[in-house]
Image (tube, rainbow, N blue to C red; front, side):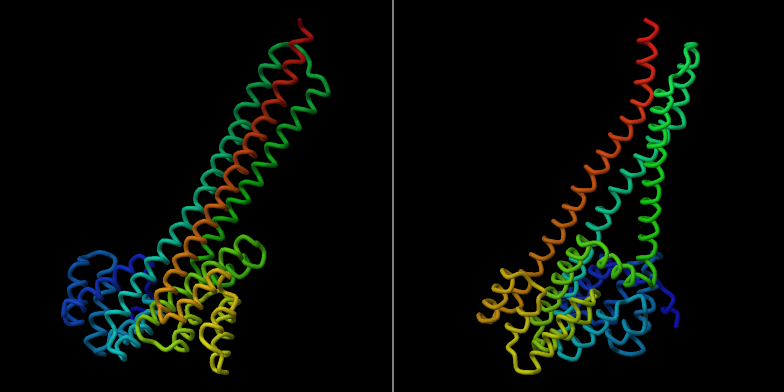
Length: 350
């Protein structure tokens, strides 16, 4: 099928699509007519072909969920939720919930991309500065010292070689880190994405903590959406497990789901799953006891999302001064390796 080789839509586009479908359904517009309107509004843009295939699939199947499932550019989770919404007659509410879910996903991914780009730019600047010092500035100083007609002492030569060697070493280190970051960004866009993320979670505790908070936010968001859509708690837990990419978080939700099958209350199983903090666990218990499961899960999702954003800001706040300090130390070492021998020679001439 033509859609099989197409690139998946990003979270921002999915959020907009779900919001538009919910708006059309709320206004009483037929689903096929609404998708046709989306196709016409897309014009010749990159989404025109996607909407054209979706319109053809809806005309062929008569179902939004089946049409989404027939094209790999749409997430399987979105297609499954659309099918459930159609079966329960709550497609509009499901699409509204999905719009908010993908909007939060887009916001988190944008924050991660911004946090990753800043250290890379700073590292590239450090590489350029060190390279200019070594290749352009140091040779000029050597020429000045040679034109003075005074021989360089052994200690001066050793100090200059030390500064040059330190500059090359730091330059090589920064370049390797930049290449590793670029390779990582490329791998995250391939089929090896989950393996790469699993390796990062194992090797770097900050990434592991951020991944856990992100999984908590996703699980709470899905539970809020499904519970507000009329799903039973066991069905909501099953759907939450299907969207989690972190294996440990997915196992925790599946274990909680199994405990519910054994007779454990929804609040107890969810609170004891280990996905949420103690404070959030108490909120969940109180919300479920008050019959407001969807509202409390939405609040927990927002709180976990804020924790993710704070964690990303914390990582950036650590990386930025580290790179700046490294830049200052290297530049100072390179300059001192030249200025100290020159100062010594000038003193001997006076």
